[in-house]
Length: 307
Ligand SMILES: [Mn+2]
Image (spheres, rainbow, N blue to C red):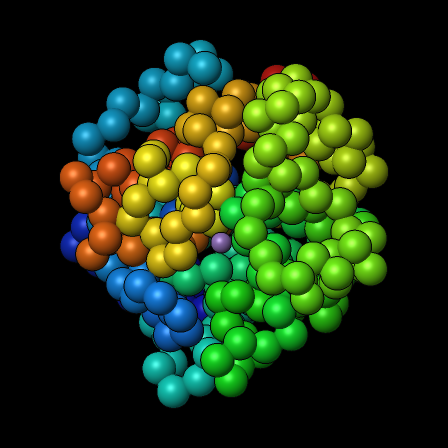
């Protein structure tokens, strides 16, 4: 990278999957964001970018689902964002600077968190670059709609409130929702934001979920996809900061992704993995798989220009 954003990136000896591609051959830029400041239960997010990079080394790059080989185009692993440690707000601003640079250079960033708070900076950059029709699709067990938590507005528990600071409710869709306080539920109802519970996905199935999401996606310009790994049932993703039972399965997630991904998607973040609680690296493996399938799916659609 070159320009001031370079000041905020450090290259690492470990790259995603042990291999990094050529900038002129791939739109994807993998960036680690080891933000680990506001966990209210189980910390350790700062270890996730490394852990997910190593997990990817042990997964196949050929996607049977999309019939495309990610090895044919790869991605550039840019390294990790160097974050100030004295203020979450400053850290979020640094993420925004890096994201803005990547978006304006035509890259498709794939952020490996780090806590969910990073989404507040990255999506603000996306909204600045892509305009008011940019939508954020958030897979998350939680509504994250608290005004503030543990004394900060920039807690991981408030990230959707921070998105509402600059986006309209119509630009946000929550998927896999199943955990919130009564205050957050009332706020969710009052704002009129769209959401799809994990219960609905189970009850009405993948096709129904995908068609609701596609109806929404048709109203959007560009789409930023944020995957809080706690959207998955803790049986599949135990290594997260705040596990919540009764979640979606990897198959449900990947099938929904298969149905909805198109060339409107401009970024992915995968957040909230906490390796110290990740027995057998099961959660890091799943996070790496989300990244590989996202790149496979988006590349297929970009290549065929199919919407
Ligand atoms: Mn969450």
